[in-house]
Image (tube, rainbow, N blue to C red):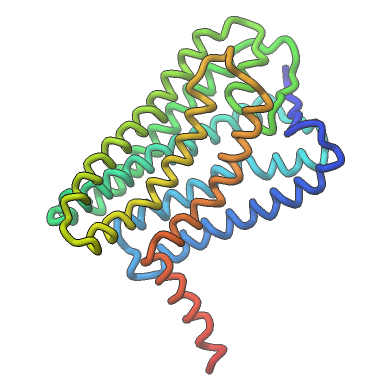
Length: 306
């Protein structure tokens, strides 16, 4: 096989333009939201802390993540049965897994940052240094890219001698594995092991971190102190639950449970809906981000007032 045919969301010809318009608006809103977070965390002097360093890089990864998937999905709404080369499909899968994995690892690093900030506040600046932040970011990105390259190579070394129609809107792991015309048990085990490293282990570490965080918050005597401590964590916790919930549903299961239509619905959520919600969650639940946005708007309005 030299190319694949991406079938897209389904046989909804009369709704294609409507879906194109809807998801295009969502895509632009998502890009605007994450770009805003990147810019304000770069520009505003009050947001030059490790937490916002990680948030800026999370938004940068998220921008790459959606650009790998959504433009091709939008093109598929306008031209049915879009063709993608074998190498193009492999590259899309590799970047999707790599960026998604980097996001998983970075969410875990952010949970550790919150754990130290709340459970060991007096030593926070000594533990979470600029050098450590850069090292953890580099480790998250390099690890995810190596794991992704290994897994993608194993999948695309399989023989694809039958149908070359991918019943999905991008080259996702279950959809591509479904087309292989040989035994994929070893590959499924490899997928499971990589998902253990990228999804389950980081998610368990996040839950463990929040267990300690909640216990530390409950020991705070004042209601105002508890509220302030918890407000710094809720955005990250909500984003983590959304991200890991969808990913675990799709990838931590045997091939026998693969259902294309159900997978496409869940995939639409975690490639379009949840990335759009992340900036809203962080901006609405975070007083410092809202304050930075207000300051940015005031600066823009001042020349007009004069």
